[in-house]
Amino acid sequence: MKILNNLLLFVFLIFAIGNVVNSTSQSWINQDVQRSIDITTHLSKESITIKAKSLIDKNDIYQISFNSKYHVSIQALDSQNNELKVYLSPNSINIKEGFKTYNIELKNKVKKEEVVQLKVKVTSMIEQMKPYPSEIKQGQNQLVLYFNNHYFTSPYKTETQKTTVKLASSKVESYSEEQPSSLKGSTITYGPYNAIEAFSVSPMRIHYENGSPFFVLTDLLKEYEVSHWGNLAVETHYQLENKGAHLVGAFSRLDYQRNPGANPNQIAEVNEAVPLSAADFYYRDSIGNISTSSYQYLANRINFKIQPRFPLMGGWKNTFYTGYNLPIEKFLSIDTVTGQYHLNVTFGVGIDNVYVENHTVKVVLPEGATDIKVHAPFVFTQSQETRKTYLDTVGRPVIVINVKDTASENYRYIQVTYNLSSLSIFHEPLLVIGAVFTLCIFIILYSRFDLSISKSKQI
Image 1 (cartoon, helix red, strand yellow):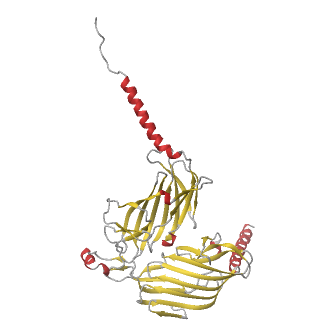
Image 2: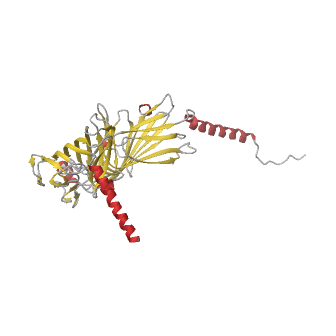
Image 3: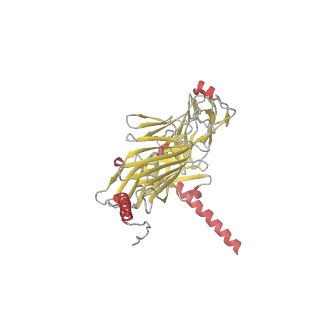
């Protein structure tokens, strides 16, 4: 009897999974898909334009799938360039084995037969692009293997599609050919392909020269410390790694200084865009202050140039941190009706072509802040800590926001709202005044006591 029950349960699960797949594939049909893939750097940047027709009424979820081995950063826009919410589908594991399916939440419900246009930006690197060979000598050019799908990976049928791949150079060792396909200079065109079924796979493989360094931040911690006395302190901790072809053999500083351009896959400096109002820059590592940093004022930003003590060749790592101060009035506002404070800050860092594996942002709020909420246009995990600093009694609330696998496209604003008593700004000054007053009282009382031991006078 137990065996029969287990068999019935197995059949039920198979039937349920089949229903999930069928209901997914029958909700949309892709009328036209245009993919533009830029692999001129170490990142794969896909810009996908989708024209899809709804097959059901009141449809407000569009799904997009990727190989489960790939770590991707996704951003979706509608035809009005409004950013749409993207999150991993709760039924992703049941939709198709070997794929991760994400939900794109539309602004409005779509009627049956209605056509919508979407633009999806996808950035990925891990497992999709790797140096081949994996080791090179100083001065050698770096070759890269790129993997993808000739077809647009979708849980829906696609009527017509075309893919254009932009390479870093015209030096192509080999590339997969799925007819019709063509190579012209540094551009490969695949398609158009017609009547492609859902989850169709045709492996794409391109072996070409790409001298871009594999700029990866394995861990990034950005911290904002809010002070209602007029300052917003920003400090960023970087764990940087060049995941390009590893340097084999000895490194020659003489050869490097003689011809730095002979090693294009090395990281000699990091340029970060920071707000124009930033001041009091510093750049330090475990040894101490590094004097090779500089900043340049541009029209709409400051270019903060960070130059490590040594160039990062393939396989090399470095750890450092930077910081600066911002005027709080440009980032903090108050709702005159509710009295609630709104803090608007950027989530990522302004570094081009950077991939972050573990991205954390901490917001240190003033002591006494309550009803704290975080609003962001992407999915994140949130936790809270308490930190005690100078003149704190119960400690300051610290909001911790974490996202895995982000790219430079995640340089977007988040909003932190909280309530704070108007009298709390006087908390620390009153502590100082109280301490000074107590010390004065102690001195006064101490000076009035005669604690000396003296002999009594004899008559």
